Length: 152
Image 1 (cartoon, rainbow, N blue to C red):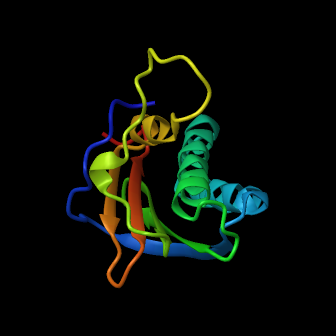
Image 2 (cartoon, rainbow, N blue to C red):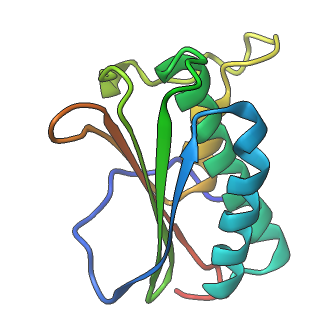
């Protein structure tokens, strides 16, 4: 894993679409999301361990959307766009849940030992760049970028 994520820099190089997944915002659909992200990460040249890290980060993000964004309202949808970049994988997650203030998306203190509330910590630790923003017309966008470790 890398250090804390930074905001996304302007796109440099190619950004080739791999897939768009439109998935109901339901916990029982996370397995489908994980499988799609795993295939995309492998297509981008990630090794097994890096792939599992990326899958974990996206899974945590989707769980947060389902539980905190939609508040388990199963009528919601998550749209996941996966892109191959020159140096790795870029993911974009969109929802139509009530807008979230990006400044409030913070992990709890790691010294506060109890279950839960570590999803944003995992995302920021695993991914190289993480950006939360309001989606035009309503909802939220979470964009994350992971660079392969074999690229300087």
